[in-house]
Length: 489
Ligand code: XMP
Image (cartoon, rainbow, N blue to C red; front, side, top):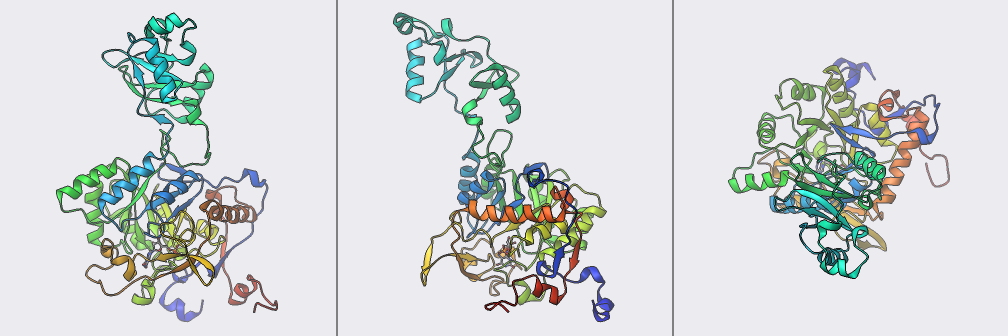
């Protein structure tokens, strides 16, 4: 840095971004298979520390489901009505589960033939037997069907059912369920509460990890996240809808370009009092903003699980050009990470936007991020909303900033930017190349991160935060890209 800059701002306030830095190589005493890239957002563990952005050309239900199945998270956008948001969160939450809520039951005095009929027609291998009070008193499986035709026609369920029901309590983990199922060699495990009522059913088949890295809650439903305006809804109807939405949402992401504002902070506090789910607040870009949220925000500590950072660095953003204000994601991450460490909080840090290459992800982790969020990487995938178009023989999809004129016409995101300023777009809309299925996109990001962690000598994201980072000179930047070849200068 020149003295000119030093006289105005100290070194840390050099507003550096991904291309300005490199991670220094470290000593590696482990194998690639020992690398653990999982990370925490509050109490939620993600096997892949990657989130798809809350944008209407990036994350609707299809993207959110696929991101969660592959170990990350998709934040459903807010450029739509509460009715549409309710529809999306319902679909995501109900997409997967190892707990069957709608369990087939039968009374003990009913005939065996009815149980047999139900099993054949519902394609199930067992039925829970409940008494008149609806309390569990047995289980009747295909193995309990008697041999004699006479018993099948005239016998009662109670004479052949298994009375000793091996069960599990509501809320028990997948691991606990697997332990009981394998220990008892059973196929089905009724969930019974302390008073004897049936609360669901777990089957061995549904516990099989088709997506072993999936981000799931304790019942095997996918973790569901939704973007929200910081404004408390005025109408009772909207408040009622929001309460219903909450039933399906684990984490709300307060979604504005600049959260360091009294009005947004106050609105969010009201929302946090009204809703029981967890909250990630953002975006902010500086140490001071983080310090303010931690020390003066007066947010419910248990619900305030994350801060999202980065301003004006997104590939579709024009905030910095239009306003001259911004906090590139790497700078914002380093600043906010310092504040979180200084105040010794448990709050997680999400670095949002500006990622161009897989190598930018590890730089964000080294600067202090717990998870990263991107729209750019995912907008061109099969799972993003919108159609695949063709321009000059190339397949493309539309990607638009939430502050673009096109996105604002939907009418829901004007409060994401400076309120009242409806004319000045702070984002653009453009085509991005179609990149195929999300699996492939995530695989290259994962491999970039894995190889980076090996070069840096970091086995985990926590160790990655201890890796050294340095500013790269202009010549160094040129040298770290392909150079001196016929087609590249
Ligand atoms: P990438 O680089 O992944 O960035 O395209 C996505 C992030 O950019 C933010 N975002 C915007 N910022 N004007 C802005 O200044 C916009 O129109 C806009 N739309 C999205 C957002 O934080 C997103 O996650």
